Picture (spheres, each protein chain N blue to C red):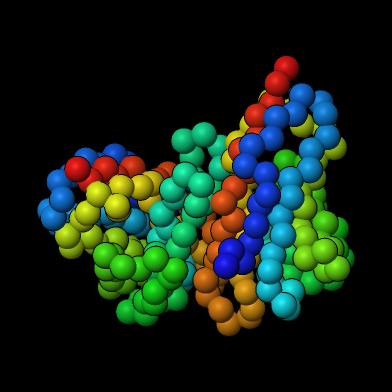
Length: 114
Length: 113
């Protein structure tokens, strides 16, 4: 069973519009949560992570994510997207402390239209 | 410049011909790992290493070998490649375990015919 799910394979938004990318996990306990971005032809770069504490976390490039325990979700948001945000976005989890496996979702490809 | 370097970037090979993809990092990181990326499947972890001489299987280790004889290097070995190992491979390193930020290489696109 998929332990981390990204329901949207491809999203298209207009430049300047807001963005929300969805991520759900299926572990019973709260895992460690990450968002990575992959620009075309590049490796992945960490945007932000959540381990505990404040459920709204800020990341690089103007991104933020909100952890919602009741929904087992960790959605990524940006108030106003730029053409340079076109990329593939991956949610990832580490199941629990001491587990050294990083499990990725299947990714959401973001297209920006002028 | 801090980086993870993979070689080669592109490789076409034939079924059964042993190959090695090299990975080197210059950040003195303890943790290194290999992933393969396939359309619709995201990234899946092949092997990881917590430190020199310490390696363990990820989620899809079949058909792959790794070694960690030096801290900076973590080569991926395909003893007898098969077409189902055609994929995009990424090496990553992080300073002290999977909870610290992973730095990724540029990727190696492997085609096995």
